[in-house]
Image 1: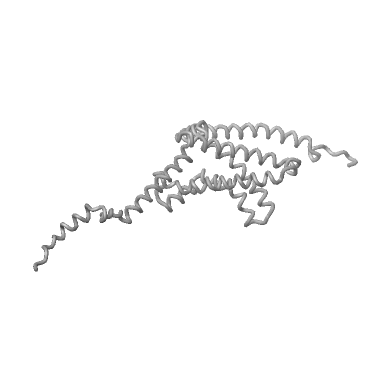
Image 2 (image 1 turned 90 degrees about the vertical axis):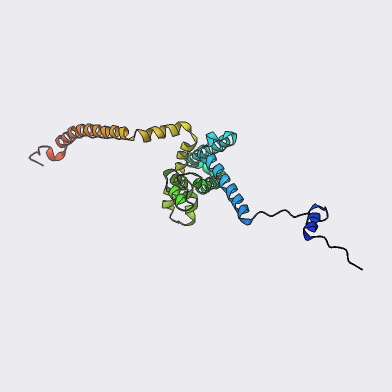
Length: 238
């Protein structure tokens, strides 16, 4: 009794691929491809955050909401700082000023950290470490840091006189408005472009002030010499 001829292995593979009972498994993407996808998503989110914080007026409704909310918070912080110096108002609502300061510092700290994290999306700061260090020493980044330092420094400094002076740095939050005002940005660009002419003007103003103060000072010294007791003739009985 002879056995039936066996089917080729290739035919079996074909039946397995075509049969619903033996489906072929889809090839899994390589691990490197998934990591590249996550990296591209992260860089896209970084660019989006950077654009919202640096150019909010060009980002539609969300950008205008972010800019408007931060402007309102900055103005409210300056108003709270002024009202807190009035002792009756401060004694009437001490908890309100405390919690308002805590919430404001949380928001400003998050803004600073997001700017530091997303700055590598800019071609000026591409390096993850050196780029962020360069961004951290820019004038506006230093202002952002100085605006939140008065809240954290009491945890490490106990001198009340130093803390009172440091609390004045809270007024630097007002300078953050320049980021969210197109008019202020335009004035800033004009000042930078015309800095040589402005330096000449300031020098001329300084010369005029020195000349005018000299004209006022010389006659006053002559008058003081004439009216001083040492310049008066003494009587014989004195």
